[in-house]
Length: 132
Image 1 (spheres, rainbow, N blue to C red):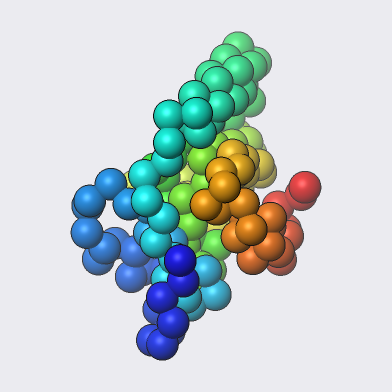
Image 2: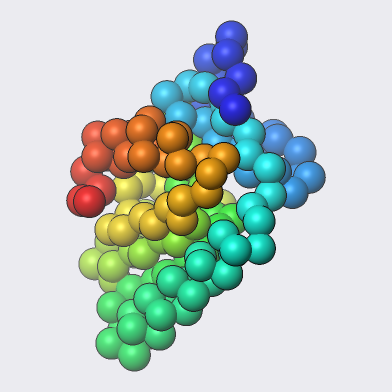
């Protein structure tokens, strides 16, 4: 659900409560998503595991699973389900998360988030130069 009214920045996600919800700022709007269901987590965990093993065995880069902050620009900070950053771009990995466009993001679709994931988030990822 988007919280309309005040324009936020990606830095505002660091001020959100630690309550199990996922807080994202996309183009200045706050989106709050409740904790994912078991089936979603099972799928995200499986994808993370396969990708992590492949990347690790070949020493290709780093793989992360949510929650990990990905700050695409001043007005967009998101938490994709799975993120990959190639070794050549390790400089975007910071203490607080990923600062810049990763090489791959994965959004596991849920009934409650599929419209946003396929809409505003996919468009935002494309604008940031993340291939899909």
